[in-house]
Image (cartoon, rainbow, N blue to C red):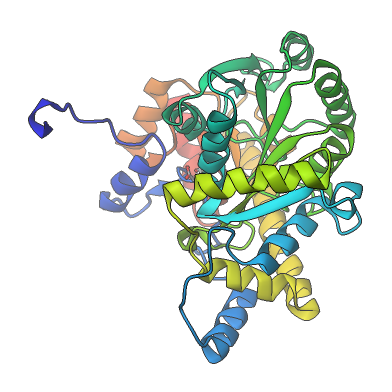
Length: 396
Ligand code: LMR
């Protein structure tokens, strides 16, 4: 069997990491995978995580199985973080959450769950979307279609086209929406635009699947959950996939959550039993370490406060990087307008160059970004921005 296989190309995002690590250029810059970096280019462990980890080491007494749901306490705290403690859907017990191995695990569980409930489902994703969305949905057997989202020419949302497309989608389909910090474009819906999308969702009756991988990296923890909260209040059913990779800096611990919102608590309980069956058949139960850290942080007032302040530092730094790059490009004589980079949100923006220029940046300047010209803005720093801007100026 193995002799018949042809090699898969490297993952468009993770493959860059390997290339970057092998590059010996002293000024190499990694704008590939979406991870936060401090001014020294290091991805630190948050102080609140260090404290929670110490507490866990001191108090953990067993490594016995927990079960497919993962920690109930983590699940509860994650729903409260996403929806707000007093959200009507939470108070009505129509929200059920399972811990998952990262945000990708949450998405795959959601996809397998959808497939087991409804064969032949179509899921609509934004054009463009995170490179792995299509692969993981198709691997679970869903058909993936796209709706218009980002206009590469004007660097704005194709909002009218998006609304027109959503207005054609019927109640049997699913629509994937990014809660905040749209990956890869950095273009988010405004609150008014969310309201319109939610009205269309309620009218058309399709099921929203919201991916919230960057809560707190846009405008703030509550602000970034606007669409999630309003949507859950307006529709009978939805699925939310969240990640703790970026906002808690727990990337390699693989911890996230998949949440079902049903129209009442009885339906929620039945649906949850199906979800748990799906989990059991894939990986049996989620890893516990990251969940234990998150629940310690969210469940301890002082640590939660510290986390929110560390998250603010990360958010402000990325926003600062955005403006810094725009300013440096101007300083280096670039006349093309890149001001859109400073207006976008979260970890990513498209630089807007073609794949040949992306390759040129890599080969001639050791600057790594995804072929689509998606840059991870967190990889920019005071010490590399000048070299970055000069290199971009050269290839333009
Ligand atoms: C990214 O888009 O760079 C991150 O979500 C990391 C990943 O797994 O692709």
